[in-house]
Length: 167
Image (cartoon, rainbow, N blue to C red; front, side):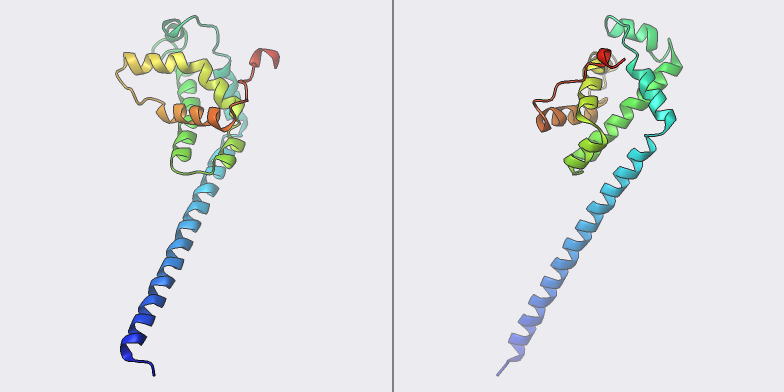
């Protein structure tokens, strides 16, 4: 014979199990939504304007050191070039934030190719480190640096692209 106590315990167990299943579904759906958001956000950067800006930023290679870069492309010397550079840095910084928050690395590195991440960081690392030191802002582009370090771990055999051979 089933007692009232046993029935109460059984119903409590069923209730807890159902709430765990519900919570797991909520988490899975939230993760899927975040992945979709990442894809939508990235698809907007495949516009002709983004591609042109990215190419202009990649061509900012005629500098000797960070001081020389600042004289040619810095905020005061060349506001238009600087704003384009900051835009691209923010795109990759945001990608790093997505990765830190648990975005699927396989998906993220399909949207942001590893070679591009590595070569872009290598090109502008001296500028970023200079900004951190000079402006006393140690976190500037830290999520982009995280993205770079994870890209290196994800594909350690990958070499940064040599852009001079592609032009």
